[in-house]
Amino acid sequence: MGQTHATNAETLGHEVVAGADLVASTREEFAETYGAATYEAFEEMYDGENLDAVAVSTPNAFHEEAVVAALERGYDVLCEKPLANDLESAERIADAAAESDGFCMVNFHNRVSTATEVFKDRQAEGFFGDVTHVDANYVRRRGIPGVGSWFTNRELSGGGAVVDIGVHAIDYALYLMGYPEVEEVFAVTRTEFGHREDYVDPGDWYDETDEAVFDVEDSATAMIRCADDRTISLEVTWAANQAETNDFVVRGTEAGAKLELGGEELTLYEAGTQGTDHLVDSTLTGGSLDRTGWEGSDERFLEAVLSGETPALNTAEHGLTVQRVIDAIYRSAEKGTSVSLE
Figure 1 (cartoon, rainbow, N blue to C red):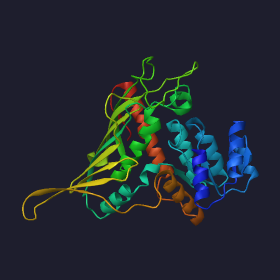
Figure 2: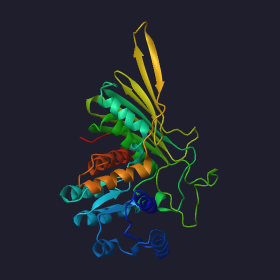
Figure 3: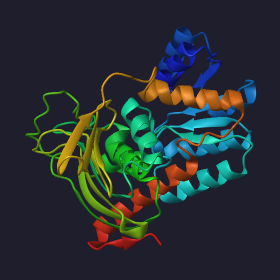
Figure 4: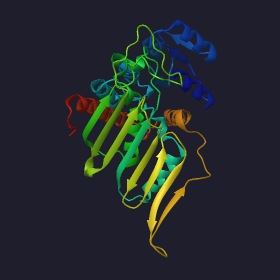
């Protein structure tokens, strides 16, 4: 992801000044690709270069030290999701962002899509009425990241499927609802595939090593209750015996919609009485944003850096809200009961 952000920055007409990484070969490749200075320690890079902004894409356990150090120097920061590997760390990042002359934006890149833009504009016009429920799905049939990597090591990641891909689903569902206050979570997490010697992986995601660590969940089911009894049903899996789906179904009092996370298709569901009682399903066609996904997110971050204005999209506070939901999912699963966030 670090190289993705660097490539996008150059594509968008900005200069990649420097990069930091513990691995010498990675530093050499980065220097050759971008003509940039490289450092083993990010603190040396922060103090040794005249920087405008920083993109942090380390394993989750190291987000806090890199992000906070940048914010303390007044740099604008793009932090990969999730905000941190646990709630306490995320709170410290949010506090640092609130006190900094710079801003922190979390890379929830799935918000940047044509379907999402149309949905949000329709929502602002009152087309959907009150959005009361979102059915949120991020289901991989087989897609466990390499065992032995930091993704499956709780100490480095903070969790499994919920932290890796569930974070996108939680943020996107809350964003579609207008980010209401989350009040209660009930969840069950499962580890059903990661330890199996007969695990089937046609996509070659799974790359077990002799030192493999798999101490995280590979799926989760959750019910999230928000203010005014608005709800989110969440299904997240790295592996499951069902068809893959990234569908998000939105229910409003006046109309509904279906979007695909990271996709461009939007279907609207309406009812009317003109002529006779009837139902209408319509699908978005035609227009599209110039840049979506990671490139679109990077573009919006860099535009905010240039303007000097904190972006309204993907704020540290939103990242902290998502982290609170993640924390509640794990606490609920451990206790076997719902947990309150109030």
